[in-house]
Length: 189
Image 1 (cartoon, rainbow, N blue to C red):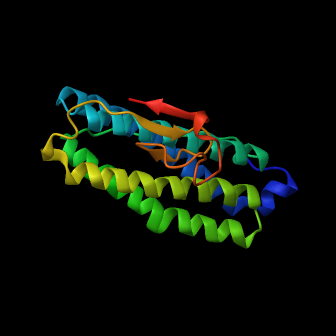
Image 2: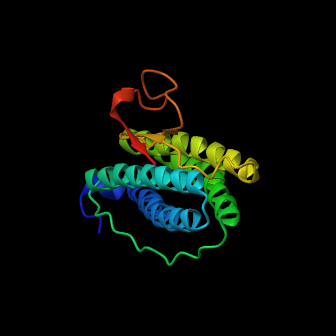
């Protein structure tokens, strides 16, 4: 699969990027399914959050795929079946997945990419990890207020089209992760 000398020296980085790419695409599919369940339960705000984070995960996957191609690989993934539970259980699962990426997966992948001075991979992985931190926070907030009614009405979330950073409101004129102008954020409900 990796044939050029440049890609062979980056084999571990590419392998990690494949894992991140597949993980992000599976998270995208999972969060889309969780959004449908939340809507069915009348928790439209939670559904909005799942849709926004699903879009962000898709952006992360696309960024990783671009680096994989640059390093001589071809980005392919297997989407696993999604087990959908109650919205509260789905929120907890989503938060746990984001925490795993923040605490374990991305730091390990970043150490390896930095060790090989692979700046393209480092940038893609860092941006994804920084955005995942906001996702974990938003899922934690949603879990904390599930019973207050906050999650019943649909909500608008704003997703950075370049890195997937997600926010409920404009926090600045530019994305705090990648510096993209706020006007280029996607509004997801």
